[in-house]
Length: 130
Image (cartoon, rainbow, N blue to C red):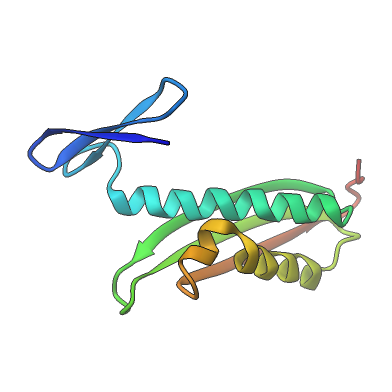
């Protein structure tokens, strides 16, 4: 469990169970929306990598950028996933795993259909699966 302690104005310190902290709020390191986006991106990544491992797909690289889009009602989280795999893995296979990850990721499930995953998939020719 995390602990949030109000500091001043509209910011506070978020303490993690493992002796680390960040400041959130107005003028702080992160906004609550940043933390929501990070939570979605992190859970999506972990779920995707688990599914890739279960299906025997060697992921060479994974990175994402996420943010909360408040221009829609209801708001949604947009996650741009950049995945690099060997040339032996079909693009549609990675897209399917990402869709499945959005569907079964615990954080994504809590937000219902408010997650938009925008994949950027690269296949390296001549790369060897390990």
